[in-house]
Length: 309
Image (cartoon, rainbow, N blue to C red; front, side, top):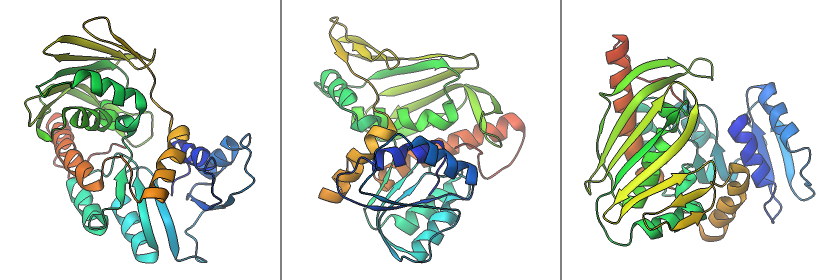
C-alpha cells in the first residue's frame, strides 16, 4: 500500500525474491502507480505476478505480507480497515508510524498482539552498522553521540537515529528534550513540516544522543564518544574511523536491496531483525510528543497531531 517514492523502492526489492509471488501494488494516485511501473522497467521479472490498482482488491482475502508505505496521515484508520478486510500474516510499516500518540496506540491495539509486525528503520540491520556496533560496544558504558548536518529532515528522519542508537546502546529512551528546536518550516512534501534546531535524547543507560539539523544543506556527520575515545562516521563516503585510526568501510543499504533480504527472512523464519511494532511504538510516542509540544509552543497552537511523515 503506497506506490510512491518508498513504495516503488520496496517493489524493486520484492522483484528479487527467488520464489514466485503475487504482488498487489495499491495507491490512490495514478501518478504514484506510474512511478512504480517506471522504476521496474529495467528489472527482469519472469516469475512474479504484478497487479497495479487504485483501490484495494476484492478478489482475495488472505495476504502473507502487507507493506504499508503510505504517508503517515490517517495511517491508523488505513491499517484498521485493511486488518478488518483481510487476513494478513505479517506486516512491515514505514516510519513515521503516525502523527499522534493516539494513532500510534490505535495501530498497536490493532496489530500489536500478533508479534508479526515490524517498523522499517533499517540501519540496525545493515552489515556496516553491525560491524560498527561490535567495535564500539566492547563493554557496556554510556555513549555520547552527536548527529549533525543541514537539511536532512530532523522531524521525518530522527526516528532512524533514535532506533539505531537505542539498538547500539541496548537501551530504551528515558526522555527527549525539545527545548533547542528553533523553528518549523514547510517540508519538500506538500502539507508537511520540518523542524530546525536540536533534539536531545537520553537513554536509560545514561547514553545521550544529540540530533542537530540546520537549514542550509550539508552532509550528516556522526560522532560517538566512548571510554576509548571518539568515533567518526561518514555515511555519504562510507567509512567509520575510530580513536586508534581503525577504519570500518561500508554503506547504508538501499531499500531496493533490503526488501528482498528482509522479506525472505520473514518468509523463511517468521521473524526479522527490524524493530518490532512494540519496540518502535515506544520510541515513536516519546518522539511525537516532543515534536508536538515544540510545534504547539513555537506556533502558539494546541493541536493534537504533528504533520510529519
